[in-house]
Amino acid sequence: MTDNVSKTAADKSGGLLGSANGPSLEEINGTVTIPKEKGFFKNLIAFSGPGALVAVGYMDPGNWVTSIGGGAQYGYLLMSVILISSLIAMLLQYMAAKLGIVTQQDLAQATRSYTTKRVGFVLWVVTELAIMATDIAEVIGGAIALQLLFGIPLIIGVSLTVFDVLLLLLLTKLGFRKIEAIVICLITVILVVFAYEVIIAQPNMGQAVANFVPQAQILHPGQLTMALGIVGATVMPHNLYLHSSIAQTRKFNRDDPAEMRRAVKFTTWDSNIQLMGAFVINCLLLLLGAALFFGKDVDKLGTFGNLYAALQDNHLAGAVASPLLSTLFAVALLASGQNSTITGTLTGQVIMEGFINLKVPIWVRRLVTRLLSVAPVVICTILYGGSEAALDRLLVNSQVFLSIALPFSMIPLTIFTSSKKIMGPEYVNKPWVTWLAWLSTGVLTILNIQIVWASLKLFF
Image (tube, rainbow, N blue to C red; front, side, top):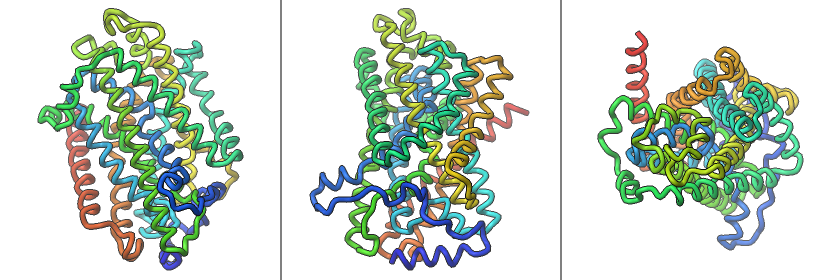
């Protein structure tokens, strides 16, 4: 079945953006050996890893400003937004991983194969802009963390993020399992830091749990803007491309139906478990903002630097304030930025290879994707004299843009995975999966149109 799918993709790609250009992320594709044992936990451990890299995108620095800011401004009101976003993420990542495993194409390659040249070009441009918006959050978060911890000026910190590419090249040579292990360790650091900070902040868990049920106030303009920012920071378009690629890193017999079913099953388990971890971290971020800063002067909490200072300010954070609290915050921010850099750079490669079949050395390809992302941050830093507030505004706006760009990835993913011709009768989406995917896409698109229209009215 998979051979027929691949052949169909190759046949349809003629005359579009180019023919299939070999395996996605060829240097790591099919490099992780899977044991023959049938035990559940042995298989789960063997397939675990790609989900962690995907989960990183759901807890990157962009989430921090929107989730902590959402808690500081509106208390526990937006807990339901985090829950709904996480459920949508689980659905989308399941479809993305399944697409990669079954068709042996990532989402970018499939888009090139199954769309016209014009549509493919538009989707490529939107996706590249989404990658830039994602990287903006990573670059800003990493640079500010370096400034808070070591006093490094922002412009230098932003420039240093370019060298993250060299780190990724080294990790790739050590093997993909090493990358997964490092990412999981950094995620653990973030989880432990915020779990500790939330425990001592003592949030009102009764109110938090009650607000997992959506409230009508969310649709008010201010709350809606913040809610969309949380959605954009939580459900990341680039993760759909990344997951459809790295789901193919496991080595198994793709001609064996039982092996294929096993791969889809345990890849889905891995994804959902890791995304549950990301959901917990995002909840912790909002709980921290609500417990410490709700009802206070939130205008002073709009930047990472101000949050860092507030965590050691007794007037804002109360009796729990301490230099240790703020230092741990900065350490977690640095870990988050480094994690997101690894996945963002990998995704840039997937997009560039998949959509336009660009054949250049790996280090050049990764350096170009990083420079494209660093450029707007450097320009903003220079124009505003290294103002952290300006960078934080750029970060929040990038998260809203990601929410707007998301349907451009969701729509083709839903179409491809709902096609029996592409996926085959066994792996095509169940009707309820397709309906939920279209419902999520439709609701998000309508909300985006509403927020764009409101912004235009304010502008004019």
